[in-house]
Length: 148
Image 1 (spheres, rainbow, N blue to C red):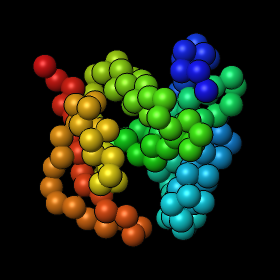
Image 2 (image 1 turned 45 degrees about the vertical axis):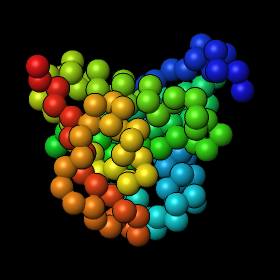
Image 3 (image 1 turned 180 degrees about the horizontal axis):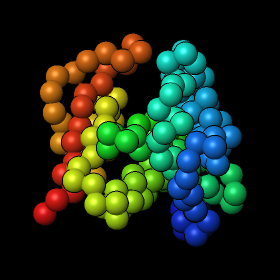
């Protein structure tokens, strides 16, 4: 896939669960439930109904998603396998950070899968605390201050 052509055809939608559920659910099912074998009972929770959702599209196809919880925690960051390696996740995270800054949030946090800590560090997040297990996958808490 041509990176330049991909860049020109990306679009991010921000909305509630009711408006973005079909596309966010599709991506999360493929990435977390099917690829990473997260049980569906662990993937779907009450936080979806009260979170801000982000879905990235390429040519009207949903390719990446994430959510921002009311406690300023970013979660369920997922990019479809065919679109990894094109900075899609980075662009999605940048959009969430800009959105949070516009909302005057003081900081953001997330629970990173251990292999992805370098990705989040490039966005300015710092590791905090100890490694822990979540659904059989090693995670660590990460934090980003949005204040000067």
